[in-house]
Length: 208
Ligand code: TMP
Image 1 (cartoon, helix red, strand yellow):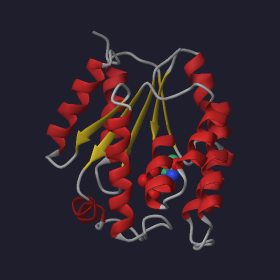
Image 2 (image 1 turned 30 degrees about the vertical axis):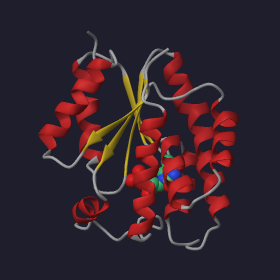
Image 3 (image 1 turned 45 degrees about the horizontal axis):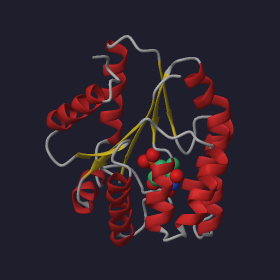
């Protein structure tokens, strides 16, 4: 089985730059690696992503949002993630179920039992080997993300939504310290990357 690594965080914490950094580290370590994202990663998943993030259904119900996230995930697991892991490849995924706990659980305040029920159904025993959560205050993320294009359906939520998302991420790291870790994303990129490199080594992902 290959290793399953996921990257998480609120808007503007540097997910894209750090995803590329991790990809380069893995490639330099000679690891066959599949880089993918959620929601998305398959034709069906990308179509669901458009529905989830576009503005056609601006007042989508929270339950519909949750179920669509897991529908995209079921397809992603079946078509991309499980086959790659079974083939011994490392899978690096930009967001996964921890995002559901943070956004739909924390942000939307949905019952956590609904999420864990879907997680067990769709994933069985499968959990990421390592989840890196890039953590920074909401204001810092806003400031950095503010320079980008028009907000999508979820990005347009207010700061208190993102405060809850951040707190839910922090709570997840405390609940599952063996596989979920917080990375302080406030310092300059090079310092963040040092922390990431250390974690990957600690988990034996870059080889010993
Ligand atoms: P991004 O990954 O391009 O930043 O955008 C994906 C958006 O979807 C982001 O706002 C977080 C949100 N999201 C959820 O709300 N729940 C989920 O389970 C996932 C994977 C993403």
